[in-house]
Image: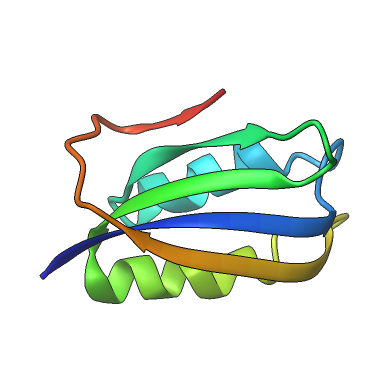
Length: 89
């Protein structure tokens, strides 16, 4: 089953290659969507794909790349979207 989620990732997540690392992980899991920096220092992520793989990706968001320090991941389910690939915005 396919699902889409929108996540707001808080903590030290900008300037630590979080978006690029999320893109690599999403590509490994065959997840589509995007990641972008927000003005408040958070990273917004939209992820669509197989429910189990999206759950695995969501778990990864709590860890992030080596120099990240994630303090919160707020998750909202959204309508399924047809998104090609995973981009960094």
